[in-house]
Length: 314
Image 1 (cartoon, helix red, strand yellow):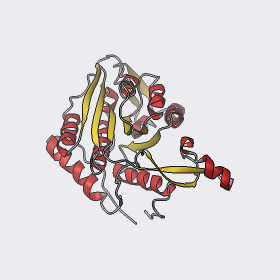
Image 2 (cartoon, helix red, strand yellow; image 1 turned 135 degrees about the vertical axis):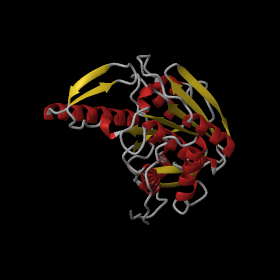
Image 3 (tube, rainbow, N blue to C red; image 1 turned 120 degrees about the vertical axis):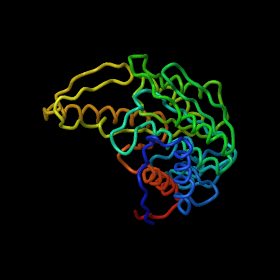
Image 4 (cartoon, helix red, strand yellow; image 1 turned 90 degrees about the vertical axis):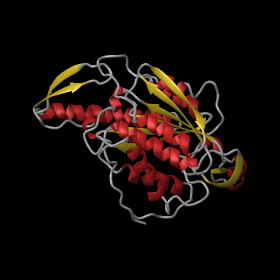
């Protein structure tokens, strides 16, 4: 199989309706023929009914170990679950000032909206209800879980039309507080997706771990290339969008650019480790890459690991 998709077009001066139309066409039409079967979503989905046993593969949830078959065959086995229909899907959406940034095909906030659109349109196909927690510097906003295309478009319109966050030096966004809203009160078992750059107040990994004990959790990390390395452009003024702090950096010094790249790589590695230890799956999207291609690769890799697809050629 081969496919080619263009990057997300910047919002610019386009109307929200045009942006949403483009997203819907990308998700619902470009993925047709690839996501085959009854459960066309980013993840197979949790289930309450036991399915067939199969040999354990690295990355499988050890909580699904089939000890009877393991003892009988002396080979570790896990038991798949039959995916339920009409589950609740919840999305924790980071709306902090650090998302109002982008130096490539789009801003990170546009990539966040694209990720929510992918989750929403794909899970809506199997009858799931979608709810959201919007995490902003001033607090959190709960959008009740509802089914249907109209409610999904209303949520996406809210994200596209959201005004830019004031970066004049307010309090940092507490992502962990938003995730905690999905932990208590306990909600019906289903899929929870956290969309963020994870550049938040420390401690978000603890509620994420609590969330993963009951729900299937996917963490979608959005990244811009300028967060990973500095360009050689002489003196560059860097602004912390969360606090408003400014810093003049002499980017012409090679050792400084190297130290920045090493620190950024260490930070991203720590985020990936925290997500993995919390028991969540991890999907990274970048503003300088084709986000649809990354989503497709994630879906195919998951299905291949579970034995649902054969080898794919790109």
